[in-house]
Amino acid sequence: MATPDASPSHRDNLKVMNRFELTKRLVARLARDEAVVAGIGNTNFDLWAAGRRPQNFYMLGSMGLACPIALGVALAQPDRGVVALEGDGSLLMQLGCLSTIAVAGPKNLTIVVMDNGCYQITGGQPTSTGVAADIVAIAQGCGLSRSWWAADEHMFDSLLARALKEGGPSLIAVRLDDAPATATTERDPARIRDRFMRGVGAKA
Ligand SMILES: Cc1ncc(C[n+]2csc(CCOP(=O)(O)OP(=O)(O)O)c2C)c(N)n1
Image (tube, rainbow, N blue to C red):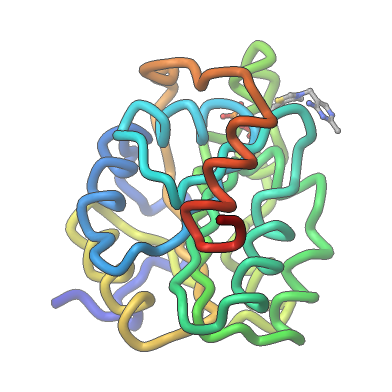
């Protein structure tokens, strides 16, 4: 099994992977009704396409909220695994949440950063991760010591299994191709909220 020690130190050394493929792998690994909170745009579109689960929450409208919402769920339900899926552009808009998560230290929270180096859904404008910034180094600097790049799909699987089993908070970043999302999430925020609340037992 690949270990975090083998994790590359920089985005440049990574295989360029596909978001939908990785999202399917992630969903297939969830065996304990883990909550998955996906950020605005392609990240939640591909989660939607990977199969509807009542424990999935699909953010619409505002960037940067996957990790803060997932932090709230993780603190409210410490016995449930919680995964945040966020795009690099959205995370860059809300970097402070990483240090807040490091301080709060929820063991049941795993963050997956879908780094395609651009704001893809609004036209592919480049983000700083495609040029200079390193999300894993930023996360480690915020105090999230369990932060790793996944060099390929196999390492993604291994790191995810480890994060879910050992406890975190953990952050796994992946470098993505420019393939568009495979579907579009139903745009009904009230239904999304209600289904999720029922899915995690927060509403009868
Ligand atoms: C606060 C805010 N600013 C700008 C937008 C417009 N906007 C929506 S999605 C998006 C890009 C998201 O980029 P990223 O999170 O990297 O995801 P990707 O599109 O690459 O999948 C932008 C700029 C917004 N919805 N909210």
